[in-house]
Length: 232
Image (cartoon, rainbow, N blue to C red; front, top):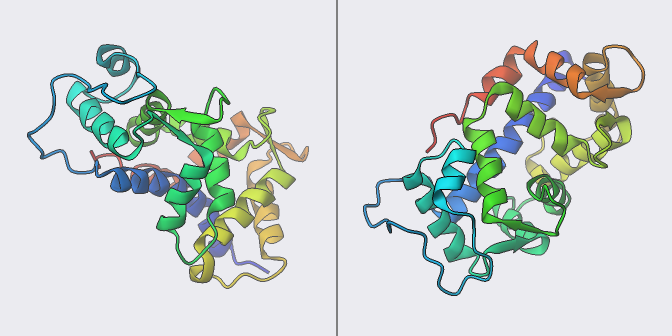
């Protein structure tokens, strides 16, 4: 049986992994440090197939300043010259972050959460919109984004099969560093505890309202949402 600390720990870990994954993207793109003074006044568009929306529009739609958007775009363009990221590239990036595990499944779910229009590619606008929510958004915005990640089939609910897939993906991604050591029935136990806590009316699914209410009642989850508030 799982202890209460172990079960609650994985719920918190799920939130932290979402945020850390975004930070790892920032690190990969070289975007954490804003001290570089050599920032162009306008976005460079040379050799880019997809041209993002204007800075002013993105500044109005996100919680980033014009200077921050310029830095974000420069890093995005350097690593993604075509102006878009496809799922295979996304998986390759995460394989570098988690070399001791298999991050492909979790990267697939995360990619789909970034690809809000379901076009099969993540544009710069998709990238900064998601980062804006995860790093600078309100508690409700961050939790809604996380709920959307867990709602794999996008039907507005989280069922046990979806949560099982997410839990297994997290364990696979962590690889040999998974703690506690994964036993065959451990994912199912975590899912059962998740639903005991989140499924308020015991109907076998977790709605957005139930998810928001339960997460806001959990001090560990609430603290984790604030961890990376000022990384940029």
